[in-house]
Length: 205
Image (spheres, rainbow, N blue to C red):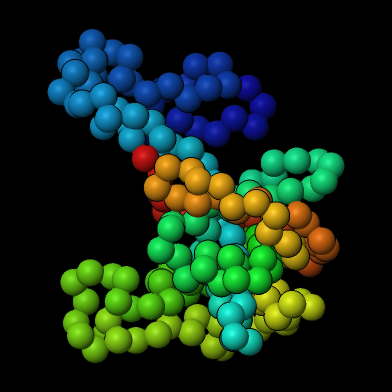
């Protein structure tokens, strides 16, 4: 089994797959205690994702948000799909001008990714103090970046950058899916991409 990763605790290797010990009678009993929704959520937490910063601009001010629900969905034309929460500041910005960038982070970009985890508007996080709720987080301050022709940020430390034009906005349950045509793209350096497997973060379930 060349290149296979070692099984994690609570799992056992079978061929090239890693199987959970949930297949044992003892684990089966534990599984029956969970609801169908919990079992689905548990499985979906294992879906791996890349970690991206989606750039946008509004009234001349660039912004960035962290995203992992990003994927290529067409060869001709080249289209990238990004899922947004419906209340997203970035989504509203992209709706206004159809311009956005996708910055794929490299594996050494953990600190950069963490900087973009908070929403732009402090009021979106319930339970914060009044002062914290009033804050506007300008996450690009102190980050090295350039701008594309529409004013969207291109991060200097990204692994790859994509300049996109939004072509469709699609309802997707409690999210909205933006399909963007790739206008330009560049690989900035050679490295492995940052993924949810490396970070341990999960936006799924």
